[in-house]
Image (cartoon, rainbow, N blue to C red; front, side, top):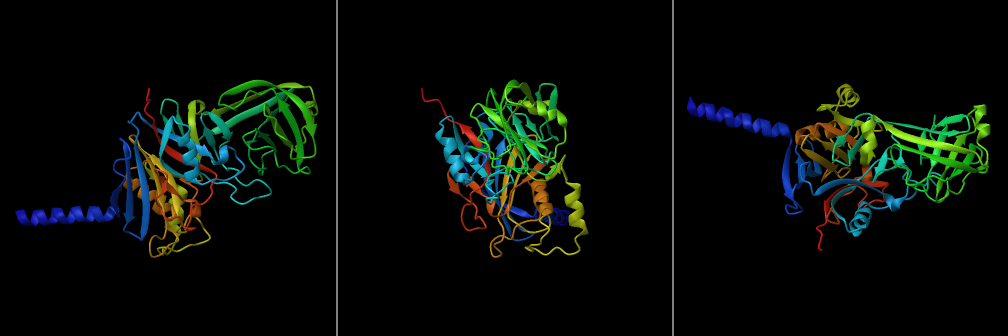
Length: 400
């Protein structure tokens, strides 16, 4: 009876291990205290993932984001962004992965424009769009992933306009966009779509919980205005019928105000937005789960036009009360790694221990860098230029 009990226990332990669906292979065991890096071989299907776990209790480690070429327009490799950050000397990049979604092609000069939130060193560079798929870290190290929205307006004379976008190409429903020098040299707008108000006297960078006076320098209907170094350009959709905008004339004074809601987001130091929340309170996004459950047949490695259900290379960011997870799944390489659906990615994050997670850009962009080396196998067979990146950094010891 005793031997039978032992056999049953062993069988149960084996079943649990099999259900977990993966085997960890430790890599780079001496990178830094508080960091674990490993390859995760997912046995349910043929998929290889690379994972970095950062202890939230290690005071020498930081979460940061980086913008390609230090401006919105343009692209750069993850490794190049990491090198540039390390060269500043105060922090060393240990792990880096690709960031969010945006314009990877030229798109009439808008190549490099992000489609969701990017806050870097306390500067709001682009606003949240998929408000549920955002992650931020405050100066004190608090993790935030609640739904976040921007509240921004500009008041000239007695007229106030709500700002819908910052440093993005014209989006449907966005009637007013603010372009700061972070975009690039000019707005790349089309003269037929709207008019532009050139504003000076704004202290930059554009920080959170911002309020400051400004001055209208000129108004243009030519499009593609130069962005002043000490100001911004306000693009107003020509379809906006509010007659009060006639007060936006040269010499007029006004006030620009901006904040994020909920209020705790105004304390964020670094933040990034993706597309779709994968996990919330330990549960898979209901939309992702319903799509998975209604799919009649799941074929390992199958690619489909429905990207949520297609097996693709993936990048994700997750966390729990103790740990930050950066995850890259390779794909589109049948004999090595087929990739994952979003449901599978979310399921694996739960297996690893994450309770909250967002989906970042995937496909050929999925890149996992450790100590200046690309560790994964990008599906494009080489490292791709991307829009932004996510870092785990470590304090550089003071040599003095």
